[in-house]
Image (tube, rainbow, N blue to C red; front, side):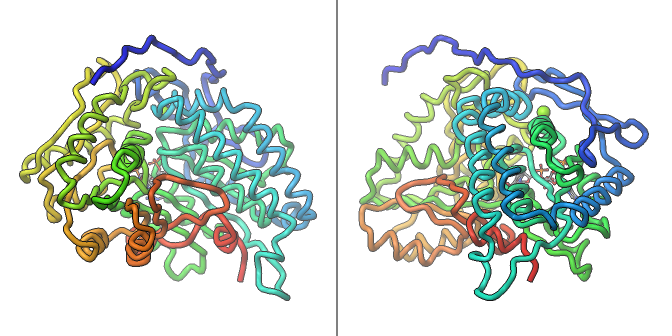
Length: 478
Ligand code: NAP
Ligand code: MG
């Protein structure tokens, strides 16, 4: 196949990054307890980006108190239509600053600029716009005759794969329903959460309604354990999700958990194979595979296995890996050295267990954390690469012969977050989708998101829904 050389097309905007960032507590920037800080880097170059305040339990306490005061004093009392105005203001500010935010997201986390520009930032604004619309209409979301009531102070802990989007996804419904928030972004990607704090400040939200605490897992654990928190919303690993559930058991705190996944992506022989291959590529290589709902287990009908693998092999050779700030880049940097090591370890286990690795031929940049688009064939259900979440650009290909077998293999996982089905037959699509034990099932498409559509899983993928009317219930009492 002919491939064209692309001229470099680097993004020219450079956002203002401060030397140091404080914590955003009670509407003001403040130094952390004992002035502790940590460094955030650009994973594509390993260059230092900024020094960020490290929140200790003392800071968590200050932030939770500020959120409580703001809840009692202003936020639960103001007219819902006024809450909506603040949310619209934040949504508009995100839109106005979208280019700067996209570059910041890409610099701090390594994802391709075309993804942060076309997906993360617009979707973040969309979550604020959507929930702004709900703020004064909540009585339509609850059962007739009931009054919508907020819960109180929400502790929200988000991961590094969609930093601003996960923050928006959690803050917008919480505020729309009248709650106040303490947000803890991931250690490797604090910068867009801090930019959002600046936006919150400029939007003139009453102090303490939104607080942002940068730090690491210990900061998150202190937030979880704080007695002043009424509700926790967590997105991240199943392991930490379980720890949180254990910690708060019996405390009366409300909890939603959005955890890992090992989604089955099922392709029948009658599917339009060109579209299916594009869907599979999008399903696993989007955001370097750092996606909880990534279609990481491809189940193909046996008689098209060789054809699909040939097409996938050809297609991944055309994915451009490199500088995340280049507008042509498809595969950016792995978020951190630790994540790269985790991917490499799982790939080694796949080879050791007897699967065959197919990798896109490409030169990795000399610095930064990169991993080529990869797929495994000759994979068995028992292999670790077929069972564990790799959270990287690595697809495991398995086969099936009948729809029953496809369903059985797809459901043979402790997770249940998402799945995909490709077939030309509408009835077969529905038959399979109804039998898949996953929170979201995409039919003849993949990775479609909208703020009005509930998202979440069950079993080891967590519980509770985010987005849509269902997501509002998680932020209302009763
Ligand atoms: P993680 O440890 O679960 O991190 C998620 C968030 O929880 C981060 O803000 C993290 O802070 C915080 N955290 C860590 N330990 C905590 C604790 N004991 N109590 C409260 N909060 C805590 O996930 P990770 O280490 O970034 O990634 C590990 C694996 O999780 C990945 O390889 C992937 O399989 C999975 N993952 C899933 C999702 C998802 O969307 N479902 C997202 C990310 C990762 P720090 O980051 O500052 O430590
Ligand atoms: Mg970083």
